[in-house]
Image 1 (cartoon, rainbow, N blue to C red):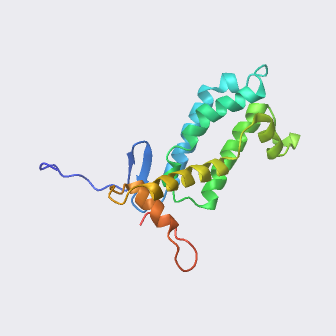
Image 2: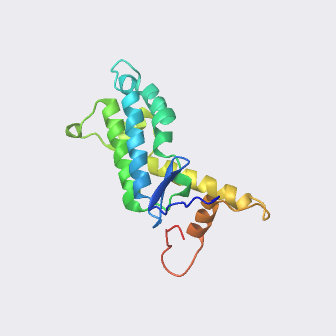
Image 3: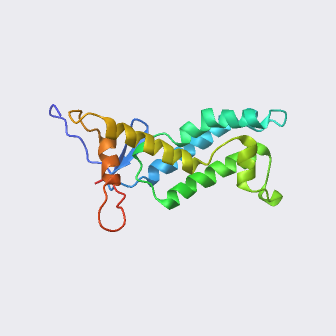
Length: 167
Protein backbone atom coordinates (compact mmCIF):
# COMPACT_ATOMS: atom_id res chain seq x y z
CA UNK A 1 0.00 0.00 0.00
CA UNK A 2 1.56 3.25 -1.17
CA UNK A 3 4.94 1.57 -1.50
CA UNK A 4 4.86 0.02 1.99
CA UNK A 5 5.05 -3.76 2.16
CA UNK A 6 2.51 -5.32 4.52
CA UNK A 7 3.95 -8.37 6.27
CA UNK A 8 2.09 -11.69 6.11
CA UNK A 9 1.03 -12.87 9.56
CA UNK A 10 -0.49 -16.03 11.01
CA UNK A 11 -3.07 -14.12 13.07
CA UNK A 12 -4.22 -10.57 13.70
CA UNK A 13 -6.77 -8.75 15.81
CA UNK A 14 -9.63 -7.04 13.97
CA UNK A 15 -12.40 -5.23 15.86
CA UNK A 16 -11.60 -7.14 19.04
CA UNK A 17 -11.62 -10.60 17.43
CA UNK A 18 -8.54 -12.65 16.63
CA UNK A 19 -8.54 -13.90 13.04
CA UNK A 20 -6.21 -16.77 12.20
CA UNK A 21 -4.86 -17.75 8.81
CA UNK A 22 -6.03 -21.36 9.02
CA UNK A 23 -9.57 -20.35 10.02
CA UNK A 24 -9.41 -21.69 13.58
CA UNK A 25 -11.03 -19.74 16.40
CA UNK A 26 -9.23 -21.34 19.33
CA UNK A 27 -7.11 -18.28 20.06
CA UNK A 28 -10.17 -16.02 19.82
CA UNK A 29 -12.07 -18.22 22.29
CA UNK A 30 -9.08 -18.24 24.66
CA UNK A 31 -8.97 -14.45 24.38
CA UNK A 32 -12.71 -14.14 25.08
CA UNK A 33 -12.39 -16.38 28.15
CA UNK A 34 -9.47 -14.28 29.42
CA UNK A 35 -11.45 -11.07 28.88
CA UNK A 36 -14.43 -12.61 30.69
CA UNK A 37 -12.25 -13.45 33.69
CA UNK A 38 -10.82 -9.91 33.64
CA UNK A 39 -14.35 -8.50 33.81
CA UNK A 40 -15.09 -11.00 36.56
CA UNK A 41 -12.13 -9.75 38.59
CA UNK A 42 -13.18 -6.14 38.13
CA UNK A 43 -16.67 -6.94 39.48
CA UNK A 44 -15.46 -9.46 42.08
CA UNK A 45 -16.31 -7.27 45.07
CA UNK A 46 -19.95 -7.03 44.03
CA UNK A 47 -20.41 -10.55 42.67
CA UNK A 48 -18.98 -12.31 45.71
CA UNK A 49 -20.58 -10.09 48.35
CA UNK A 50 -22.65 -12.30 50.68
CA UNK A 51 -25.17 -9.50 51.36
CA UNK A 52 -25.92 -8.88 47.68
CA UNK A 53 -29.10 -10.61 46.41
CA UNK A 54 -28.37 -13.55 44.12
CA UNK A 55 -30.77 -12.33 41.40
CA UNK A 56 -28.94 -8.98 41.30
CA UNK A 57 -25.64 -10.81 40.94
CA UNK A 58 -27.12 -12.71 38.00
CA UNK A 59 -28.26 -9.48 36.40
CA UNK A 60 -24.79 -7.97 36.77
CA UNK A 61 -23.29 -11.13 35.31
CA UNK A 62 -25.64 -10.98 32.30
CA UNK A 63 -24.92 -7.30 31.68
CA UNK A 64 -21.16 -7.15 32.28
CA UNK A 65 -19.45 -10.51 31.96
CA UNK A 66 -21.50 -12.47 29.43
CA UNK A 67 -21.17 -9.82 26.66
CA UNK A 68 -17.39 -9.93 27.14
CA UNK A 69 -17.46 -13.74 26.81
CA UNK A 70 -19.69 -13.83 23.74
CA UNK A 71 -18.36 -10.89 21.73
CA UNK A 72 -18.11 -11.90 18.08
CA UNK A 73 -19.86 -15.26 18.54
CA UNK A 74 -22.02 -14.62 15.45
CA UNK A 75 -19.08 -15.38 13.17
CA UNK A 76 -17.56 -18.33 15.00
CA UNK A 77 -17.61 -21.70 13.23
CA UNK A 78 -17.69 -23.24 16.68
CA UNK A 79 -17.15 -26.86 17.67
CA UNK A 80 -18.59 -28.83 20.59
CA UNK A 81 -15.31 -28.81 22.52
CA UNK A 82 -15.15 -25.03 22.27
CA UNK A 83 -18.76 -24.67 23.44
CA UNK A 84 -17.87 -26.94 26.35
CA UNK A 85 -14.96 -24.67 27.34
CA UNK A 86 -17.27 -21.66 27.37
CA UNK A 87 -19.83 -23.57 29.46
CA UNK A 88 -17.17 -24.63 31.97
CA UNK A 89 -15.98 -21.04 32.31
CA UNK A 90 -19.48 -19.75 32.88
CA UNK A 91 -20.33 -22.51 35.35
CA UNK A 92 -17.23 -21.79 37.41
CA UNK A 93 -18.12 -18.11 37.56
CA UNK A 94 -21.71 -18.80 38.61
CA UNK A 95 -20.71 -21.33 41.28
CA UNK A 96 -18.13 -18.92 42.66
CA UNK A 97 -20.68 -16.11 42.61
CA UNK A 98 -23.07 -18.19 44.74
CA UNK A 99 -20.32 -19.31 47.11
CA UNK A 100 -20.69 -22.98 46.18
CA UNK A 101 -17.95 -25.53 45.65
CA UNK A 102 -17.99 -28.84 43.84
CA UNK A 103 -18.09 -30.53 47.24
CA UNK A 104 -21.58 -29.06 47.80
CA UNK A 105 -22.82 -31.22 44.89
CA UNK A 106 -25.49 -28.78 43.74
CA UNK A 107 -26.61 -29.30 40.15
CA UNK A 108 -25.77 -26.58 37.64
CA UNK A 109 -29.43 -26.23 36.61
CA UNK A 110 -30.44 -25.48 40.20
CA UNK A 111 -27.82 -22.77 40.56
CA UNK A 112 -28.70 -21.29 37.15
CA UNK A 113 -32.35 -21.13 38.21
CA UNK A 114 -31.45 -19.44 41.49
CA UNK A 115 -29.29 -16.85 39.74
CA UNK A 116 -31.58 -16.47 36.71
CA UNK A 117 -28.94 -17.17 34.05
CA UNK A 118 -29.60 -19.26 30.94
CA UNK A 119 -26.83 -21.57 29.67
CA UNK A 120 -24.25 -19.79 27.53
CA UNK A 121 -24.69 -22.47 24.87
CA UNK A 122 -28.29 -21.34 24.33
CA UNK A 123 -27.26 -17.69 24.19
CA UNK A 124 -24.55 -18.45 21.65
CA UNK A 125 -27.02 -20.35 19.46
CA UNK A 126 -29.60 -17.55 19.79
CA UNK A 127 -27.05 -14.92 18.76
CA UNK A 128 -25.93 -16.93 15.73
CA UNK A 129 -29.51 -17.54 14.61
CA UNK A 130 -30.43 -13.89 15.08
CA UNK A 131 -27.47 -12.89 12.91
CA UNK A 132 -28.44 -15.49 10.31
CA UNK A 133 -31.94 -13.97 10.21
CA UNK A 134 -30.41 -10.57 9.42
CA UNK A 135 -28.33 -12.13 6.65
CA UNK A 136 -31.33 -13.89 5.11
CA UNK A 137 -33.48 -10.73 5.18
CA UNK A 138 -30.95 -8.40 3.59
CA UNK A 139 -31.48 -7.28 0.00
CA UNK A 140 -29.71 -9.03 -2.85
CA UNK A 141 -27.91 -5.81 -3.84
CA UNK A 142 -26.29 -5.31 -0.45
CA UNK A 143 -22.58 -6.13 -0.26
CA UNK A 144 -21.70 -9.29 1.63
CA UNK A 145 -19.47 -8.79 4.67
CA UNK A 146 -16.90 -11.30 5.86
CA UNK A 147 -19.11 -12.43 8.73
CA UNK A 148 -22.14 -12.89 6.46
CA UNK A 149 -20.06 -14.92 4.05
CA UNK A 150 -18.98 -17.18 6.92
CA UNK A 151 -22.56 -17.54 8.14
CA UNK A 152 -23.82 -18.52 4.70
CA UNK A 153 -21.01 -21.05 4.24
CA UNK A 154 -21.82 -22.68 7.60
CA UNK A 155 -25.51 -23.10 6.76
CA UNK A 156 -25.29 -24.53 3.22
CA UNK A 157 -26.42 -28.13 3.14
CA UNK A 158 -24.27 -30.63 1.40
CA UNK A 159 -23.82 -34.35 1.49
CA UNK A 160 -22.72 -35.64 4.87
CA UNK A 161 -21.69 -33.66 7.92
CA UNK A 162 -21.60 -29.87 7.78
CA UNK A 163 -18.15 -28.37 7.37
CA UNK A 164 -17.38 -25.65 9.88
CA UNK A 165 -14.53 -23.62 8.52
CA UNK A 166 -13.74 -20.14 7.21
CA UNK A 167 -13.57 -21.06 3.51
